[in-house]
Amino acid sequence: VLFLVLFPLLDIPFILTVLFAVLPFIVGGLILVGGLELPHSRAKIRGRKIDVNLPYAINYVSAMSSAGVTPTEIFHSLSKQEIYGEIQKEAASIYKDVSILGKDILSAIREAVKLTPSEKFGEFLQGLIVTVTSGGSLKNYFVAKAKQYMTENRQQQRQMIENLGIMAESYVTAAVAGILLMFIVIPVMMIISGDPGQLNFLYIIIFPIVPMIHAGFAYVIRSMTLGVI
Image 1 (cartoon, rainbow, N blue to C red):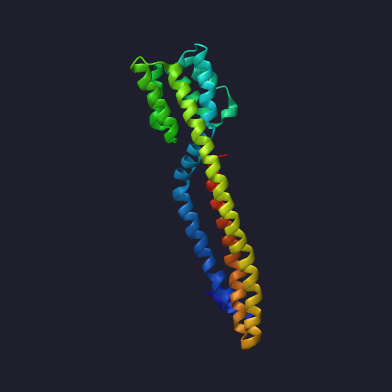
Image 2: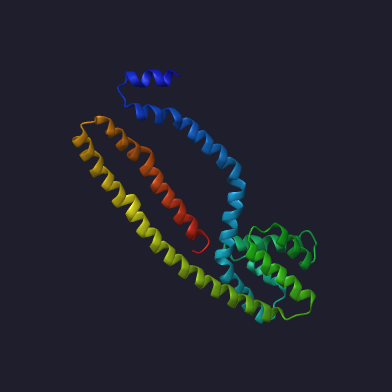
């Protein structure tokens, strides 16, 4: 209340008074929602990071399998390859269950299937379990999966490039040309009508709308590229 009383004395436009008055409630709401969504968001981001490196990690696994290396040693070796990011951590968890907790490799993989945030990696591990228990060829399975994931990865990158082109056109239209047009039109309308109150629209555009547009585009682009590059 004191905030709303003092602002008119400072000769600040009413629209800014309202904006600054509701800003704490907006920020508080965003913090609350962010806190509730943070665990799910982190798991989702981690899953995407796993998916990014999955095609390359499976190629590495396929090469080791072709050399006759056992699944346990494959995950042991993969757990040392930091270049594969989150997959290295997943492999380290599987090998830890085998070497420290004394689980057999299939039990450790089943546990990893339950815990991994990546649907693709979980599907790969589940297929590995089926191949082992049915007596299939691990080499053929790894080679087939490596080809599948590399093909899907190329398709995703191609689609991402097309989407980024669309986003770039939208950004120029909405965040550059559109804003400049408003900066030209509103002062002209204010001069013609003789109503200085229309200047409040410029305050609305400059303070809340422009930052929200840029933040929105940044968030969308980040979301689009996170699971691909």
